[in-house]
Image 1 (cartoon, one colour):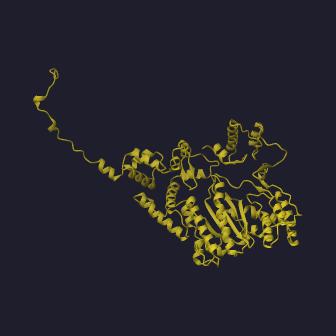
Image 2: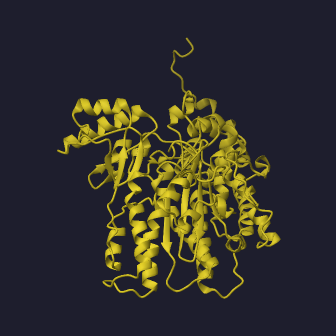
Image 3: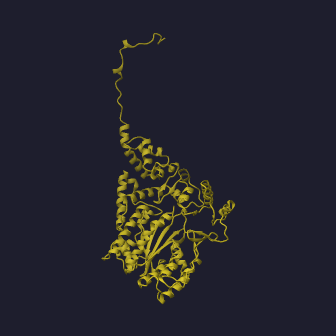
Length: 563
């Protein structure tokens, strides 16, 4: 599937097509190609715009540039300003004279903010309605005066939300970064905020909050519920990232009690709701570990540095402007790449829980930029032995965290990544950041890319086939001379009953592996196969020639043979 078809199948929202890319030339090509293809079906692109001057020139030449006298465009409910490349919440005019619960609900519902960029302010409307509900105020009855004064202040703040500008660009799909989820709860609400960190820059990408249940819950239970809410949002966030796959995911909370529950995996109480939520978090963490190759880590963050605290605290418009840097970009240390997680002064955590909270080796082993095996790969004689031993090591690491994952799959990914990082360091560096670098020959020849597991896979024409699975269409790249490649080739050779080079190479490709100069590599490995050497070197006993000779009297030659 080419990029243009992917865009038209996945980036159309009703009748709005939204696309972004780091390369303006690629965007210009996609614009021209999508316009041409849609015209064939009788659909004409109109009201186009871009933050790049060259692309706007192409749109103006084709007559598709949006011209309406305003500096902003409507994009999925937000106002987008191409000149400043910034997003604004669509301005609303809330009526400060609303005096019933029904009217207040209608006014607060005017704010449309699907990404929750203005959540610290807009959440106050839901909290006010929750207070009215707890107070037993009917829908069409005048609310008490103390609530009316709160609504007048809030209506003024909601009407000013459109004046706040948020940066549109948050990360690059072609780079590597991290994802941070900050969680916090109060007796009235709980919420989380997600930030991406890439190349020394951090941005808010999504936030989510809920009002506390009417039936009163303890604060640690609400803190655990917000972690559960953050995990529920994670798959949606990761799907929206496109080709971008975070190298690490950190979930931070300012509750030491909840952190002790998360890292130990147990709750020493009869709180059934908390136990069920903890079990759900462990299950979702294991599913993410199987999909990404690593599990999210749980961290402690002081309340003063927690941006999610702004959600539950509730801010007026004036305070929101003051705390805008913390809310939009996260703590000051977030963009530096070195998070000063506090793990020493946590009195609510046991010593064992503190050690687990500080334990980061599994992230380096399983998903670090420099994957290293603690096992000597060259000392294993078969692939099954290597997989079995590596699986036991991975299982031990994850059992320390009491997390259930597919250890065998993670072990296979770890082995493949170790091999690729040892041999294809130049190619990996280019695929992670291609700006201003020469394309390596192997990347160009095999159309290499890095998938969500962090493995280098190959593209090519076979990827357009509809008859093969993904493993065959995008095989894993193996090194020609490496102990792991030798074990994989010997394993394929055993599966095909020790047939020749062509059969072994076909078995390799059928199981989703690609070796540069594969025939030569397979031939070299098969030359050391003891079983094949034994049978191929068996001496052939020729029959005694004398037993087949005829008597001299039966020899018949033409008369002129010896002339």
